[in-house]
Amino acid sequence: MSTELLLTTDIDKLGLAGDIVKVADGYARNFLVPQGLAEPVTESAKRRIAKIKAEQEKVRKALLDAATKLADSLKDASVTIRAKVSEGEALYGSVDAAQIAKAIQLLGFPEITSEMVALEENIKTLGTFDVPVKLHPAVEQTVKVWVVAE
Image 1 (spheres, rainbow, N blue to C red):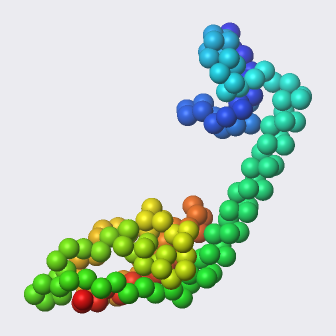
Image 2: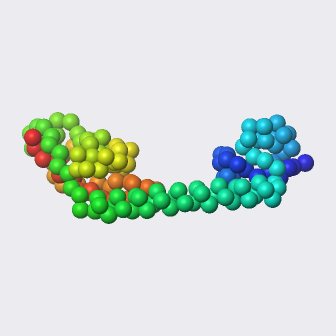
Image 3: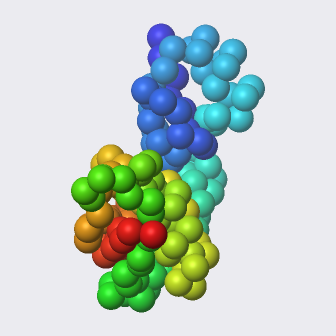
């Protein structure tokens, strides 16, 4: 036998909040319903989930708008990072995402974190680099990073 339930939260390998799923009776009765992860399919439950989804969509849209505005303000940003240099143009260490994020923060963007800086590998030479900054899953902006000798 199987039971139809309306998920109230996202569950890995089962579905997202608001999905109607069929699961084994025991799984529904002993785990999903008592934990508050799902509830029986009723009209009131469907209305409540629809309301929650609408609120979540408003929040997602607001976050996307904020990220887009931030991307517009970061469009022409460039940062300079001074580093110690050995022979030639090789750095003693390397420039990492945390250093780039800190330099961007000093420009007046305190919301930028090192996790947002999508640096494939640390910078180990002098020069100019285009570094992507992921502000939102759908919004990315490139910042010009100048690595110069100290």
